Amino acid sequence: MTTRIDRRFAALREAGRAALMPFVMAGDPDYDAFLAILKALPPAGADVIEVGMPFTDPMADGPAIQAAGQRALKAGQTTKKTLAAVREFRAGDQATPLVLMGYYNPIYVYGVDGFLADAKAAGVDGLIIVDLPPEEDAELCLPALKAGLNFIRLATPTTDDKRLPAVLANTSGFVYYVSITGITGSAAPDPAKVAAAVARIKRHTAVPVCVGFGVRTAEQARIIVEGGADGVFVGSALAEALSKGLGPDGKPTAATVAAVAGLVRELAKGVRAARTARGVATPTI
Image (cartoon, rainbow, N blue to C red; front, side, top):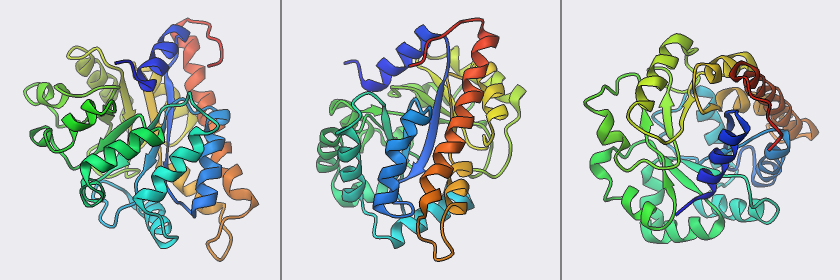
């Protein structure tokens, strides 16, 4: 079955460019502001959107993403509200792929079968669940694939050629390459090492390979794309931009959505600038 993610990457390949893939935390800083941000991302240049599901113990997240999750939880965000926001987003956008990223505990508490059914009905396209290894595929990965959702696996700098086949076995949509060892936003990626890792992964799979963790600027995004990545994620920088757009009371202001959308526009310019290096003139998607 061809998914919305598959179609978007096929269109991007035809256009000769990579994907900008912003990460935003569901419910940050509150439900209404988050929904406004979500709706603003595609016009700003987002090709695939990654939505974080806030969790109390986010072991892979750096300070900026942790703070975003805490703001969301304090504002009352729940898994049901996250799916409700996806439904509202889909009422006006049937084209942009949307991936939920998070941890297994909230899904387990929700109930796997019910979550998958509700996520699919809401318009979710894929899942990235960072604390479920391939050995636990029967827990969520295989049921998600059966439900028609892509299940995206993480590969890291420590994923060697012996481990890689297990990581890739049931991966669909794309592979998420974690460009640094450590938590989100903790360091800048080494472009040469990332390019070599992306090339190595591509020798093992035909699905797109996208890079995240540590990418903060348009220039970094351009360099990562020119190194062969099919997409680039940015999360911590957007969470920080959102935080700076809040009022003294921590509430959203007129600047909150604009701060996030403005940075996405700049990042999109960086990703699209890499098209020249690929030597392909591309229309806007």
